[in-house]
Image (cartoon, rainbow, N blue to C red):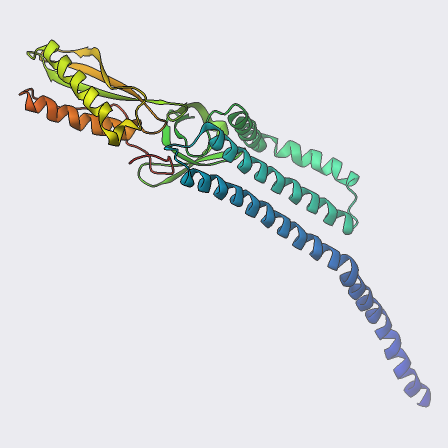
Length: 314
């Protein structure tokens, strides 16, 4: 019996040794490799946060410079630089995340070379799904490098399926373009789905107003009225700063049995064609009404001005 009693504590101690050894190994792993993983995760998160903060700071700097300047619209350089900063920030974030992921794999002793085979299989399996992502990235790269449009531009994008998306560019990355429409909606368009990009605010724009008049009206008289309205509109201090030349009648663009359409055009600063065309249309209607010429319907040639930071009059 005494032998059995003596064997009890020894057996218990022997049973506890493997558990304590395993627990000690776990503590040691937490104090070394586990702590290193946590530090890498925190470091990656801090670097990503810093990159985003830096990008937002430069973006705010461009906005402040534009707000403090006498410019009526953003320069092409500032719009392009804003888009480049967004792309660089996004690329740096991806690189930092990849480096952090590889370091963590190395800490947990996962050899990178052993992932070549599985990664090839996974890459082949996801190849069809990744084609669209690669297409978006390549298309976004050319959008930025070719300066097709940038932050603050008013664009009309023809996308796959025949739809058109128009609005003010609020964000450009290698993968997507975000637009703010005239209804206040934010539309995200994958760059790979853009077929045609029409920039309505690059360098200069054109305000176009179609004026339908009765067929029996004196065309020469109407032309004189439109020329006078264009000169007075150009001399108006409120609108002169947005115009590059005086609005002038272009001629008859449509001829029907009982009516005809005369078009007026004017070059404006980028993004200001919408406000200018609305104001000019009102002036034309009033001037023709004062001369006894009735305008039955004045169609809108240009779309409503998209809501956003286009630096212009709305």
